[in-house]
Structures are given as structure tokens and as C-alpha cells.
Amino acid sequence: MSSAVLRQASVAARAVSRQCAFSTSAVARKDLIQDLYIQQLKSYKAPAPAKDAHVGVVKAYALPPAPQAPTLPDLASELSAWDATEPTFAAAAKPAAEGEEAGPTGAEQFLAFLEADEPKAEAHH
Image (cartoon, rainbow, N blue to C red):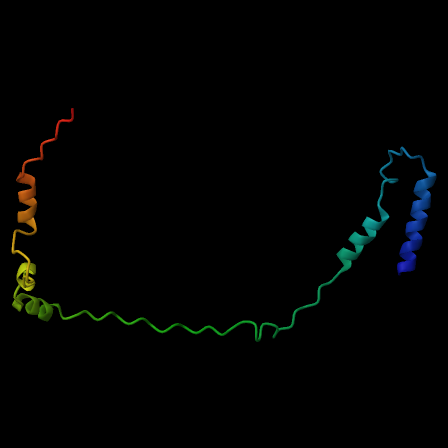
């Protein structure tokens, strides 16, 4: 087969070289190799795939387990337990350390700071 193709190609090449270099004929521009290639492509038949080709490649589908509904906490008992607790205050929870004065803290200290007079600026000469 390949020797027949080569023979045809050499005959076509000789025929083209004998003709005028400025040929306008469509027949002279015909590509023999391209025609043979297209003919082989058209005559190709792909092999049929086997019926069990997917075995081992495709996994079996299994449904995921159904989700469970979330359990709600017992809000009534938590609310009653919260109502029963006594409130704690931060000042009462911390005993005053030795050597510290029990002066104003928190909001009282901030209000005292706001009410205090601003220091007078010294005049520089």
C-alpha cells in the first residue's frame, strides 16, 4: 500500500513540475496527499466498546443516611434556673486588697474625671 502511495505521489510531483509555475487551473492545485488522508479518515470505523467496560470504573451509588432532626434544649428549666440565681456584682465579688483604698471606681471615677477642672496652662515668657 505504501509503495503505491509513494508511486502516485511521485507521478503527481513530476506532472506538477512539468506544468507552468503560474497555473490557475483548480485541477493543477489538487493535493493528492490530502485527498488520500481524507479518504482514509472517511473509511475508518471505530471499534465498538465492550458492554462491561464500565465495570470497576463506575462506583455503585448509595444514598447517604438521612439527617436527624436537632434536639432542642429544655429552655423552661434553664430559664427557671437562671431566674433562681442571685445576681453577683463585680465590686462585691472582689474583696479589697490590703493597702488599697476603697475609692470610687467605674462610673463614679469617670464622672469625677469629667467634673474636675482642667489644669491651667503655664505661660512661657
